[in-house]
Image 1 (cartoon, rainbow, N blue to C red):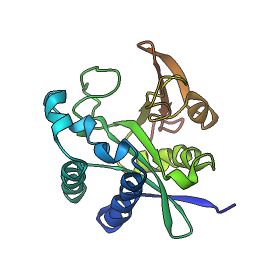
Image 2 (tube, rainbow, N blue to C red; image 1 turned 180 degrees about the vertical axis):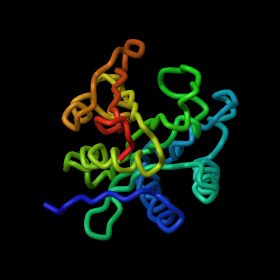
Image 3 (tube, rainbow, N blue to C red; image 1 turned 180 degrees about the horizontal axis):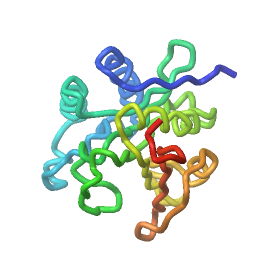
Image 4 (cartoon, rainbow, N blue to C red; image 1 turned 30 degrees about the vertical axis):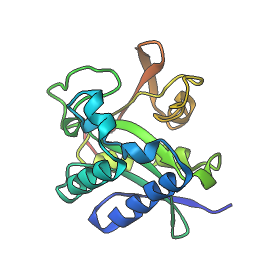
Length: 197
């Protein structure tokens, strides 16, 4: 099995990110339309639905260039095989919990969603992305990570935000429910002395 490595999205890796989503378009995957842009959308769903995947791709590409859209890419050899949208809460219009951003929005790292290349499902890509979150968030200055994994069996978006078991295996704490279909998990990124290593 190929070893999965992860790297933070930056301008130099933008074409890789775009290529991964293009693979979704080729297979008719719903996530091509999104490009994880839903978390930045402030209009109604009628506006969202009328926008194309290309419009979302281009808008998020501009955010990458401006340093306002973050996440991790997963690679097997030189092939991009996965993506996790993960960045400071301050970058997002909303999260799955629908709670407003607090005073810690710059330091709270939010995991929004996962995308795995269709040919790489079930091969540990998403778990590798979860394991890479600690270093990724610390590099962004975050002191706490938060994710909202969906309960299995929630429909076509099942797994979009990860599964509880992935996070627990990586040392995240199951904190509480978020509605009927999600959990809130958190992980401190501080060391025992309160420093961000």
